[in-house]
Length: 168
Image 1 (cartoon, rainbow, N blue to C red):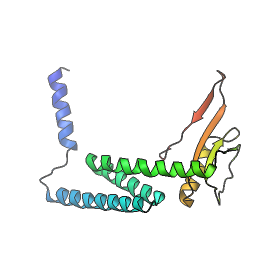
Image 2 (cartoon, rainbow, N blue to C red):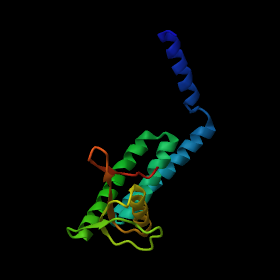
Image 3 (cartoon, rainbow, N blue to C red):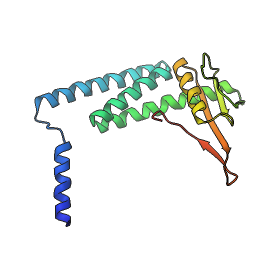
Image 4 (cartoon, rainbow, N blue to C red):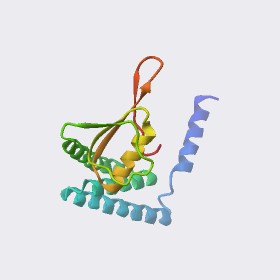
């Protein structure tokens, strides 16, 4: 295959993926989606002014997800800064609550009914999934925590640090 054929093939692919902006249905959906994103960003801003970091994070994540889903990269970029700030403030609240202490846990209960604000280190026998469960429970309960997991020493004698994101 020569370069020209590859270029034509890519151009056809782009044409298929690009929505027809002249289609009134697409234009209406785009305007409606953009309005929903704007509303979520306004709610994010209002929550941040009230220092409601968990609420601000929820709205910013919803705006970011909707913007990415609709291909609105400008709005996605606008959602990132307030999301980062809400998470930063939540982390600072967790650090303040810890008062210089790190709670070291080697297990996390299967059912978490309450969580104290602070900084946690999950170490073996605890694993990354335990840290994730603690983090999610704290988010649901709106308790500021920072959770880090240390996995067992590997064959090379190194300690692995684990980070499990929202999509795993």
